[in-house]
Length: 433
Image 1 (cartoon, rainbow, N blue to C red):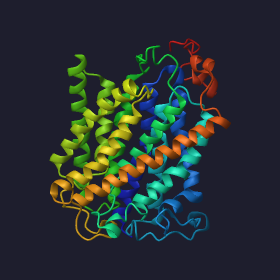
Image 2 (tube, rainbow, N blue to C red):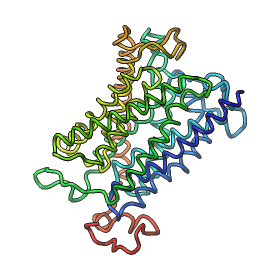
Image 3 (tube, rainbow, N blue to C red):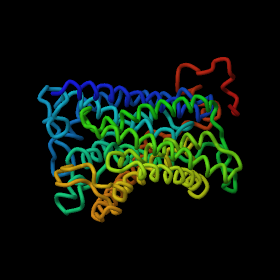
Image 4 (cartoon, rainbow, N blue to C red):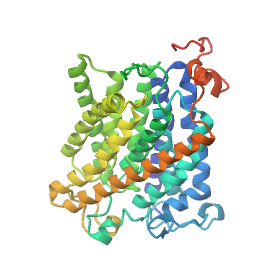
């Protein structure tokens, strides 16, 4: 064990945990005041539910010894004190600390989904979703990519680069969440009043944009633990490259989303700039350790444009109501981030990753096979997650209705779903709030 690595990973773990309240503030500010506490409660519910499941069986399914490439071995590691072999993942830090760090990723993933369903989903249905989704979707995908499963072995088994590579979660966390958000939003349907009879969308502004901005900056702070911490070692000097690339990509994405909205509407849109900022962070999460600073700026700049295009496509073409832009931020740019590894990885890092000798190189640096592995991983994620989640929501809705009643939605979910009001001096029964 290394005390420096242990201290570094403890700090990184705490930083990633801070992303959960950051997300609660961001989503809470982007919904109407009558729904803020219910929206924020979704994020905090993930802390309790996922933590318990992770200890009981989730960690072993995600990171246990591989069983046919599909899932980890269910050995109840943390309950009986046996423990999984830590050397494969983090040889210089305590095994339980590695487990805690990965738990933070498992918590944030269902939390980031919820914004797409804000202001209309029953809290009871959300609790069932979190419990089953983390088991049926997150643990298998996590194992396939990070736990030694079949996607990570595409390089060893089929000579496709280093297999599917995702340094810190563009696919495992963000694309998985974005695709699930899409499936759930399709089944739930839009908020009442979101679309006119002819399908034209109505704007429903968030009630507290400054709150959302604070949440955005907290998320950005935590992202340095999210990305740099994924080195799993404070002594790995690549953390400097990871941190710089993380900042550059987010800045570039915020800038291009600002320019896009300014050019299209004559004024910059602060909420779209914030979402662009997050889109850049999502996109750089997979390639942050494998690309140079110029590529990081390019990846972020493209992510900012993809964010704007994605938001308008989801709302105006697909007629899907996503109050916070989660599908575009996490789904679209999660996919872009994964694919960008296969394009921009410059061969300066990753020797021995997934059991393959040599560093990670993308298409622009002479290895088309790595891009193929990234394509396979992206397509697998989209198909697997969407099918599972769409069927799941259709079935669940038959037994536990996903939506609150029309009366509850008009009055506000805080009025019926939680015990207190965020702003008790307001009349939360007014439908315009």
